[in-house]
Image (cartoon, rainbow, N blue to C red; front, side):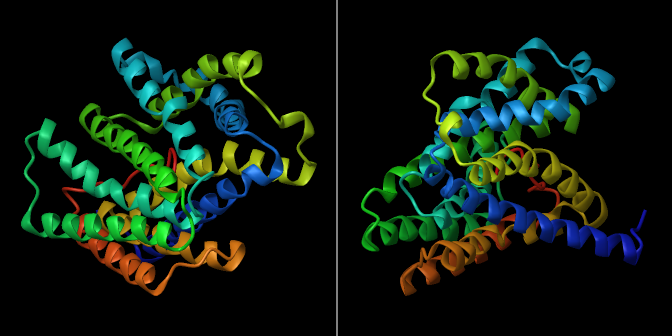
Length: 303
């Protein structure tokens, strides 16, 4: 069935909205430390607040009925505290732009590698060419971060790469197991809330009580609702109306969007070398994600 022009327009608008959502998430996460909140607080917001909306939906649709226990355990672990705390910790060391570069940028490369290793799906020459460009660009950008005075940026970059690896495994398994949106929300939100929130409340350091109201509200809304729930709706609409290939190609703008907002809002500029590497990365992403049957669009469980 061919989508009507109006429907296609709404799909492109939805995909562009996701670029804005993910790019803004990089900035919001980067400034979270200035509010006095700990990374453990951010994870609690992510699981706890999203569960307020997710729990009634899960009780209605009962997504666990079509899942095996091992699937619930694996997906919950992959989307769990280790993954999200590594990402949040990365922002303590590296500029906001590096979050988009090393998470969104490395994702097609790592997904391709995992598919080749575990699914015996050989990448095309075009994809290999894109992967080489992505790898060279990320190495160059990691070096550029240190050269620009961010002496510990490499620590943040490594943590972002860990997050990208977790997410790439999730992408591979969600495709292999044909997981639906409610199943993802159940495992990634409800199960992790039940496990993580008591641990956070009883033992982990928190700045929640002393955080100013305005930064607290910003983090609560953005970490708890926007990327997880709102983002999932928009990307599902985009993939359905304009296809996975076009959606993925538009999402290749996230690293550039994060870098631009980092410059405009936080004053975190890339050097001319870094800008060139970012352009190279974007080209590599476009080359890698373009084939519709090979690289599916990624649900924004976490940017």
